[in-house]
Image 1 (tube, rainbow, N blue to C red):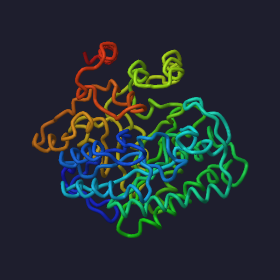
Image 2 (cartoon, rainbow, N blue to C red):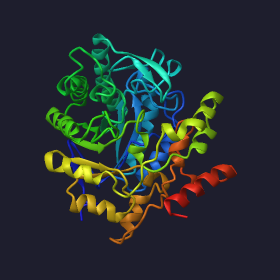
Image 3 (cartoon, helix red, strand yellow):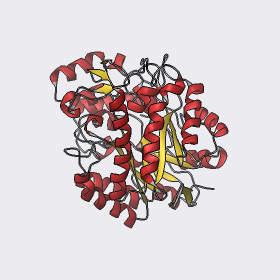
Image 4 (spheres, rainbow, N blue to C red):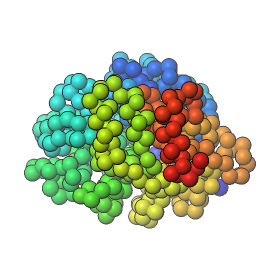
Length: 410
């Protein structure tokens, strides 16, 4: 069984095949690290994971969606170095996900009118956005290289370039959001040019001692978005660029958010923490239409991921519904993937990897009940499992129980 064997990811070696996925923690402050962010990732590192990933770090000011998100810049290097030093002391490797949110933001956060592949209106934010000029496209690509250099200064072993989920690179790739008529629009070959520019900058900055991996979609998850054949073409292009691994995901946060995470979004819990009254009550009225449910099942991306495993030769990192030892072993031993990423499992139990090791081959489950309370509060507060939150308002507890009943877990 491969789960607890060391493995190479480009120039680095992980002590086992587990990676904490880049699930946004919401634990930053003023776009910098905090003790809470440090303590969480240290708990995961001490819990036995091979590598833990700090999530959704913006490459520049216009890349930011939240003030609780990291903005990779020299001022926060000392705080990040404290985190990476602690992760290394615990025996794990440290990764950071870098990206640009595109139109998934507001002027007050991004410092400018939100930008995207094309001009339009993002209902999910909601906000107007404008299409990037050619000179701005080149500058943002250079920012990916700058972010990698900052990550190196901060002691990270790996960077994960976010090219999925409907953020900026994904907005260029998808025909749903890319309606450009220049060399960055039209054919898929043209729509991949911005991604290629970003990867070239990232790889050049990484040199020969940092790993570079890419998160990409296998499907956008809705009619009019990228489907599997085009996503295979994108993945082959990513492989051709020379990265060290691909994280296979799917979904589009502005169109099919639960395709990414699966399950049901607890709308009351989500709106409970919102400060803007117009947004709070607007989402309560229209949230079910804006955020339709997608059934959860263990290993929910596996059927699509198999197709990519057959077509690609580089290391592939499976993510999506790994909730127990049996699932991890299936992905690695039976399906031929090289690593497994876990998000909610390591939020519910930061020491889940050690628990699997101590079980000595017996199956062990992470205990996540998939009610997605952790995700619901992520937009306003730090991500947290409801099991760790102490006294929650009665109405939130009722909503959690209702979702459990619908899931058949209560």
